Length: 626
Image 1 (spheres, rainbow, N blue to C red):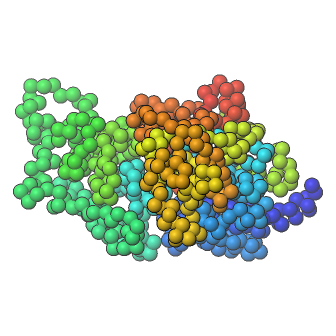
Image 2 (image 1 turned 180 degrees about the vertical axis):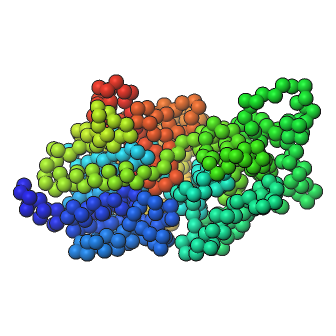
Image 3 (image 1 turned 180 degrees about the horizontal axis):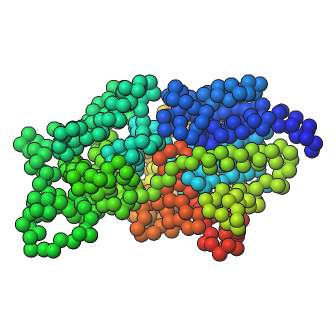
């Protein structure tokens, strides 16, 4: 193809870009500078302050606004001749159906969650439009190309659920223990003991605040002249777990569909007969430790780590503390940092081997969890999760965005045989930081692109239709609007276009046991079909009754089989939590706290494995996603 023809193909191409975050900002900029002139952008997120350090199209004045809309406006300022359509919406919305996807020559993904990726993958297959996938985590990145019938689809390889945690969720609406742990590690710990001059992904300031308000917020966490460590700890406690929650509750719209948090003040934790002094927080060293008689006959171990839990008698790290005990630990750790490690304050960073730091983060995370109605965790579990977080790197996003555009140019030039899956590595392999691999052919056992039947082992006497809809159709098979059929009988149908009468009939069936469904019960040997009309996805499932299931591994009394090659079985070290799978040559272990931070999603790339083996490295068992 001539240069003129190349230019014309680029200018006439219609491109759908899904995601306008870390990768998306870089990608939109690179697309228009390359010459693309017809671009649609879909992103449902609003801009957070934490995005500003790497999503360069956004400014502080944009906080709270649509990422897609602001990205469009920013790019049009330096490329006003480009036609960009921005959608502040969920890509899984019914408006983005197969017909919508068919208008594009290419779909480029910069998404942050597995469900949306699988949804886009299926729509691209149905519309027969090439998909370029991408992902980053820290210094690592990856770009893959998916063409119907020619290469693997996005779901041909294992995809364990990723651990992705948007900043807005962590700071405003936590719903999982890990949200609270990340918050405790990256907000109060660093505010109290870290370098305040350094920017922080979670260092949230109100979008319209003036400099005086920002300075007041920053100075609040400074120890005041003449202030005792106890008074300081109490003041900080009430601000973090009481006053800030009261402020959040004023935004009534945020709690219409969520459980309202409960402010936690010290005055409410202890009864009127109890006082802070009487809970051991001020007397730990006098009560048999540093100055107490209990230690007079024992030689001091100067190597013993400073520990609030030891002083308070909380000796079991695998025990969940009460709210009162968490408050005691919080206050005592603050006191110990101020009185025993004063010279380190202002330069501390979280270290999972720092006993006092782990105790502080555990207490702070559990107090926040208690406020939001989230299960509290043991110190052992908190240590495992908090030690495995990786921050986003803007440069990696830029590199990956460039690689996406290179693959897009190959697709437009009909040079599809030249398309590659490319890894961006942190450390060079064969003197290369960018490792290209040939694309694999479709997996014949893929239930998405090869439509291989599945087997559902299930206790049909105890499991309900709702269990199958939610845990199999939605969770395992990623159907957004699932329909379940047995022959021509529709057992369940979901979607916004279902009339109220039909919806009521289907709803009434959901809590019925499978073997009691009418007109045809779901029992051993029955074949059902799970569909999603929006995705044009259909899967045949053979039902096999089982009476006994492992309480630990199969608590739902269901197992979806025929997916052996599609189910990740990465080994987990006994010292690691489920949030931190053991990494190999590409070392990524992360419970992410940003839309650009993710767990590796478990794919094993044959080409990458071969090249790493040639270098004498242990092959990775994981593939990146963002």
